[in-house]
Length: 191
Image 1: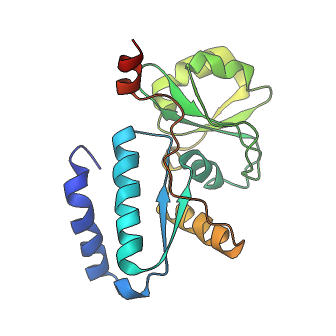
Image 2: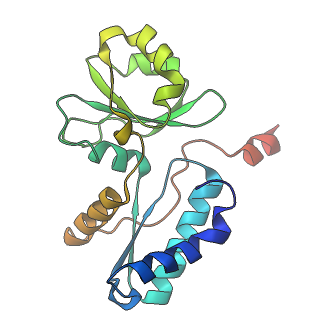
């Protein structure tokens, strides 16, 4: 959603329920993406999910955005590098094994900095791919393998399946924001 999504999110959820054969009372788990990503978007998403979870009296699970992107293309024939536009000529990223398991912690980096993480042909996915494809291709050569556009955005179905897997494992991840870098406000205060 574009700017102003805070005011339209709950009405959109109501609309989805009116079109669905399911009732709100049937919901027993709410899943939410916890980032990294837009500070405002993460806060709005988590606050909405917490409110829904409380109102519906159901469990709540947090799912990392990079994790959901990587899991959305697993199993992959290659390691996976989700890259999310972090603005300021930076990306949020992490390296994943072909099965979707995390190999490096989430990071905030300049696109040029990924060359040290990528040692073999790697599948790049995420909304930063079209922004930095030339940089990735130039620096990584044949180690840069661009994933199809339908893998560039996290899918709700993947986030939901990951939350169900957490519940089945008896370990729901908390719905707390995953900020990989300081906010602009924090940076300004430090200056």
